[in-house]
Length: 412
Image 1 (cartoon, rainbow, N blue to C red):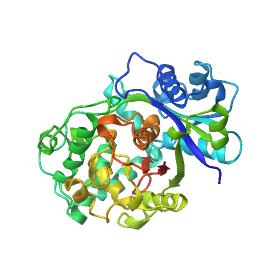
Image 2 (tube, rainbow, N blue to C red):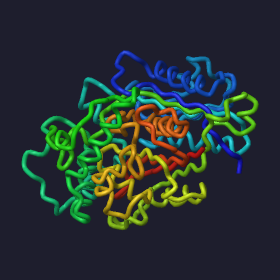
Image 3 (cartoon, rainbow, N blue to C red):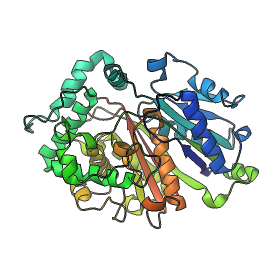
Image 4 (tube, rainbow, N blue to C red):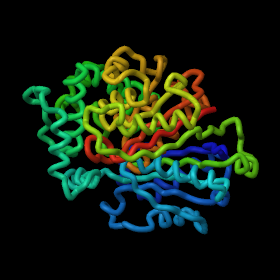
């Protein structure tokens, strides 16, 4: 199989960029990735453009990638626009690597961007409504909320302010885990506190304030057991990656010592499994495929970035990726195993809870972090002797799980 490398990465700071356009954010991220790779835009032979909400917010439903990239002088190449919910950025990387492995070219761009923040909170949160089958929205909600039945909800633990309906769903996942495995709210808070501590050292993170476990627990509630610091914010931002074959590296005279190998890139859709059939969760299936392609196992992984739209997401995904047994993700976090310096550092970037979550860019922001880690360039958040890294990026909801999951394994 053709070896594919990430030769350059770039991203904007995530946050609220009301005064900047999609074009502005794309230009910054792509320029940074090109500079990081040491090449110019003329080297690109294809581009895969991930975005989820520009049509909703701006009415630009078609040719988003062509418009954003042409504005910075990138044209005359195949540009593919894609949407795969929160997994859009990772899907763009998967398609870019597939393009190279198919022999269609030697250098490709994966770019993800979204501007999601709006002063109109009701309209902003309504943007997430397409994350499941809108023709069965009430049934979807009923099915997912049923997962959390039987776990008492203390009074006063639901916000009176508007929030996304998906926070109720994530809370149901929490309650199911608490009921079945004995996971505690404190363990969920330990994940959030750890990630906020990691973000202090990430200059591109939306939030960089540390929290103690006690501060997370005492923060304003969203919906039990979730409090505000346990949840990802609404964000704007862009992230990009330049991928090359060996021939591409040589032709562009790219510094091979900083190139990171793409050992596996797997896209998996969900199934109609029962809620308690954890062994067949789509991320478990994707991870097994990815480990098989990479020729390594969970014990070989040095560092991970996982999709923590809430802190509970990290607990679930550390189990799905095989870092611990099902039901032990909370213990893993509370014990400190997932902290930088621990057995398996997770989300050294600060994760979605701190770094931010501009949906189309999220998966490529994970790649940005892991490439930085594998190069040894992460400064105050560096994981020592990082050799293999894994990213898990999920999107949408269908049945009792995400609609799609992408698992990417990188190595030096």
